[in-house]
Every structure is written in structure tokens, then in C-alpha cells.
Image 1 (cartoon, rainbow, N blue to C red):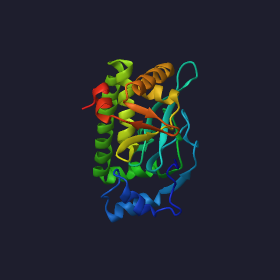
Image 2: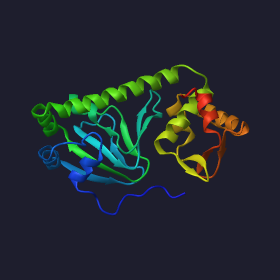
Image 3: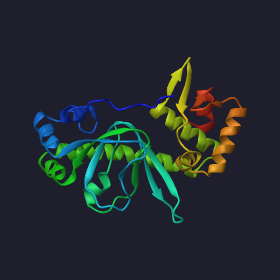
Image 4: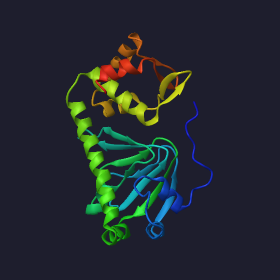
Length: 238
């Protein structure tokens, strides 16, 4: 299975800003202003865009590709906190307090981002408060999603957590072939464990149980969801 690739030519900055929900609908003047302190960057697979604890004040808009948000636990083990996709953004925390980054951001596939310099963006927000309200509204939605995810991780058994993780991945990047939905099997079992809030051994055991139950099928480069309804029921997903 061939992973998505980047377009040969970068879009113009106004085109890129029009394509991202956070900056869609800006006036021509606002887009020109944002473009003046922004740039488009390309990243290869496995490249770090942001290092944890580094100082930085750029806001990043993800145009294509996908990235993982990761941190280290007290034992120095990497924990995948989230996976971000096109239309997501990151770097907003340091935008406000100008302190160290709270997590590392690494590409899972070739990715295209718009990097927006923080200080002039804050100046623009003071001049056009509606831009700040748009960012705050999007942050509010993200916080609600995080709260829901924390509740899911706190309650429910391992099978529910793994089912929810698979459904979440499917909703973000799933595809279908011959009427059967599937997701690319591109996450390590440890990454799946981090996303679900369980151990790596639990992931392997749960996936094996889903295979025996005829809910999924594991192939070389994909996980086929043989019964999406049963998987949603197992994860108690509406």
C-alpha cells in the first residue's frame, strides 16, 4: 500500500491559508498580513518539527500528511499522546506563554505545514480580535475532545479502549475497498497502546480477540474492519 505523497509544487501562502479551517475566511488584507510572516515547510517521514521543551513561538497549520504528538514518561519511554491530520494545528500553547514546547511533534508521513510566526500573529489578533476568537473557539472544541478521550481512557475495559482507538483512526484516515472499510496498519503496537491508554501486550491480546471474533482481519499493511458496527458496539461509540 503506497502512503500518500506530497504535491510536487507548494501552494501559495494565500491558497494554503484558504485551505485550512483556522484561517479560512480571512479578508484579503488579513491573508496578506499573515502571509508576510509565514512560510510553507516540507518534512520527510520521521522528521521532528518540534522538540519538547524547546523555546518556540510558531503556530503550525497542517496542510497534508500526519504527525504524532509525543512526550516521555518518568522512565524516559515515549508516549504517543495524539495523531494530527490535515486541518489540525499545533504549537498554540507556546504562542500564548512563549515557554518551552509541551511535547514533541514528529511526522508519520511526508507532511506539508504552514509555519506562522507568533509575535506578529498576536499583534494581528489585537488589531482584529475576531481572529483570536476563531482560535479560541477551535481550542475549546479540542479541549472538549480531549476531555472525552480522557473519560474514555479512565473508564471501560481494554477491549473498549482498543475499539475506540481503531474507530478514531478510521474516522480520521480510513478508506474502503470492495465495500470493506480498513485503516493502514502503520502504527506500532506501542503507539496504539499509548493512544488507547493500555499496555502493548493488551493491544496484541485485544487485536487477537477481535480477529477470532470476526470483527477485524489483520493483513500485511492494513487492518480490515470486517464489522464496523460490532467494533463501534464494543467500544460503545455512538
